[in-house]
Each structure stands twice: as C-alpha cells, then as structure tokens.
Amino acid sequence: MRQAKRLVGGGAVLVLLLAGAALADPDHDELIVNGEIEMIVRAPAPPHVENLDEIISGWSFRTDETQALQMDDFDNPGMLGVERALVMFDTPMGTAGQACSSCHETPEALRGVRATYPKWDEERQTVQTVEMQVNECLTERMGAEPLGYDSTEMVDMSALIASVSRGMVVDVAIDGPAQSTWEKGREMYYTRFGQLELACANCHEDNAGRMIRADHLSQGQINGFPAYRLNNAALISVHNRFRGCIRDTRAETFEVGSPEFVALELYVASRGNGLTVEGPSVRN
Amino acid sequence: MAENVTPRVRVPDSASAGEAVLIKTLISHPMESGQRKDSQGNVIPRSIINRFTCEFNGETVIDATLEPAISTNPYFEFEALVNESGTFVFTWYDDDGSVYEERKDITVS
Image (cartoon, rainbow over all chains, first blue to last red; front, side, top):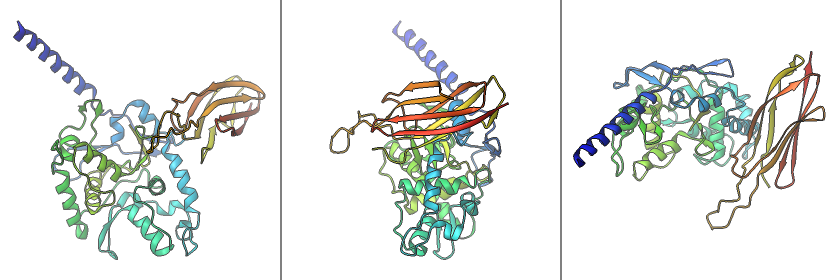
C-alpha cells in the first residue's frame, strides 16, 4: 500500500515537471524598442558555439510584463542611469579639465563600441573591457581618479555607451591576439565551480529554458548588459552577474574586473555574436 | 533628504475632444521604507513620496496615497478624458517636505 502511494506521488511529480518544461520555453515575441529599434532576439548560433543550434536573447525568457518594460525608454528604469551618465559625460573631471565630451563630443560618437567589446588593445597588449577603457580615459587623458569597476557611476556610464549601440549586431573578435584570452574564458565556462559543482554550461547550455526552482533559466547571453534587474532595483554590470552566479554555486568568486572575468566576458559575449546590443535591458 | 529626485511625464501633444489620452509618469526616488537597518544596526529613516496628484485645468484627475512598500522610482500610468485644450499639472509630495511639480500642455482639436 505504502509502495503504491509512493508510485502515485512519483507520477504526480513527473507530470508537474513536464508541464513546467512546456510552459517554460522562451517565447517568440518580437522586440522593437521605442517603436524603432528592431532587435534580433533569435539567431543561428555562431560556429564556435558547438552545443547550441540557436542563440536566444534573455529577453525572450522573461514574462510579458518584464518584456514590456524594455520596449519603451520611458518605462525602462535603466534609462535613469543613462540620464545620470549623460550629465557626467559633459562634466569636466580631473586635472586636465576635460570632460568625456571634450574628445567624443556626443555619446553617439561611441556608437558601435559596445558591439565589439571586450577587444584586444594593441597598446596595452591585453583584452580590454568597456569599463577598462573608460578608466584609461579617466586616468591617462583626463588626470582623474579611476571609477570603481562596479560603482554606480561606472555602470551608468557603461549603460550610456551600450544605449547608443542598441540594435547593432554583437560581433566580438575571438581570433588573432584575443584568442588565448577567449580560450581561457571558454575553459572557465565549462569548468565546474563550488560546492554544487556547477559550470556555466550546466545551467545556461544544458538546461536553458527549464526552471531552476522559481527561476527560468536563459542561455546566459550578455548582449543586454548592463541590465536593470528588478531583483536589485538597480543597473547591474556583467561582472557583478558573473560573481552572483559563481557565488550561487557556493564557490569563492573572482573579483569584478579580474583577468578571469575579462576572459569569461569575452567568451560569453562571443556566444552572442549575431544578437543585438540591448543594454540597458530589463531583467528579473 | 532624497537626492537626485527628477520627475518626468509623458503626455501627447495633441488629442481630439473626448479622447482618453494615455499618461505616463515616473519620479526617480529611493523610496526608503523605514524598515531597513544599516550595517551598524540603526534604522534607516523612512523617506518616500507619500502623495501623487494630477490635475487638468484645476480639476483632479488622480490623487494617490503612496505607502512605504512601493518600490524605488514610482511609476504611474493612467488615462485621462480631455474635452478642451489645457495644462496637466503633476505634483509629488516628499516626506522631507519637498514638492516636485511638472506641467504639460495639450492641444485638443
């Protein structure tokens, strides 16, 4: 009798899981921001992403209500950060008395930057992220103190830089001098971390589209970063999210801005080659 | 004292008489609930927008009381019937006594 009950119970759980899987698939809605910026939320996987047929923006995994927040800049709370950065863009900082606009004139002059970063820097002989580039400007050209890699000001500025590239196709270079960094990032992506022994791929490749308790797993694409997370009511940088994921595996994490996370960012960005820049996006 | 409080509203420039126009408003504000504690264990004092009103040509369109559980950057979206040209006046009342006001004109044909 007890045996039979258990079997019935097991069956019920199985049915629930199947129902959950069916409901949890990413949707096929189209993303057009402000009625004019057409986003590519589904694209064929680039050849270097062996285990996926199709790459899908994290936007497609969110509820209709969360999706709607990103479709109009007025509704997108991430645009508040962009507005703060616009003020900073025109404000002289540091001993040289220069503002970002002294060289770059308008943020639109930086259109295209987000789509190709992280990128190999010939002068520094390293792969640079947008944040590293901002700090290079601040310290070497403006005579100012660098911003904290994950500070509100830096995340706002990277949101501004992303916002002017919205709708452009992500195309980070993975060959040439960037290749060894890319391979290091790839290695990390498939390495299990923490007491839970989870690699990025376990959730975002093997189980994308399924539910992990109450969370709907996406492919972990970073084309939408920085992202306004409703969970934090704040703009969140991609390294902050990496740290959160690794922490959730119950591991000691790497620091934001560390060479490990720069390598991981390059690799994960390259998995989204073919999607469009969405930052600042809205996610849960 | 809440910092960087900026109200913003979106009202169509024009409408036809008797039309219900869509209005969106947002004010950037931390909406500190008064329930949280800082790292020393001291209660962080409550600091919220406690009332929001919208008037059209002196007539009340909406008058809302906001409570501490409302999230950062409160956002309101509502429709208003307009029969004549005029001015929408939006007012936010802060716990610290500040009053933030924004005006938008609409032409009705």
